[in-house]
Length: 191
Image (cartoon, rainbow, N blue to C red; front, side, top):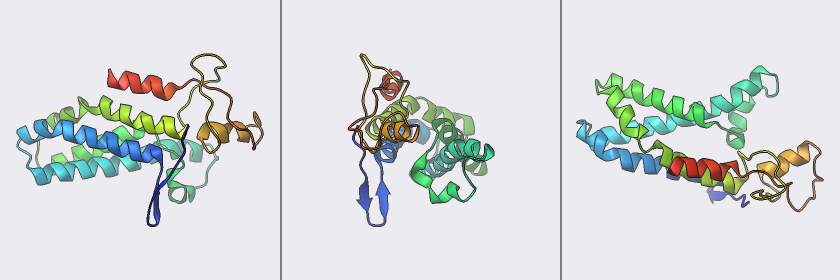
């Protein structure tokens, strides 16, 4: 719907990334009281959050990239050269949990209790991330000509994919309408 990039010097942040960071912040803020009650100090909480962010970013990227690489659709150099091209929530969740578990175990902290503290607010963070998916036009559903179909603008993943597949011309004003699965997932996460 609204593909954009926020430029921060040499870095550019897309809506998906921006809202994933917002969702991550929501999880950290809501998990904070429980993690601190487990005896983790504020510095330790910051370290755990940083581990979750780094592990989640790497896991999400690998979840997206590895199947394409195994099928010969991407070469190995694209893993880092096309970083913002795609990611997967399941890989992000697994990578983030693995990094937090590793760090907590290394520091002899209660691993399962810390993971549990982040599990409760995770769906709200997931919901926030889906706002970014909707704005970017990624993670969309099948074609839907009636209600509640959404026709994404040029520059969105839905538009680019339909152009690449020959379903619409490159100069089409919008993609064919598709199910807004991002909004369904947002509602599910919020509930």
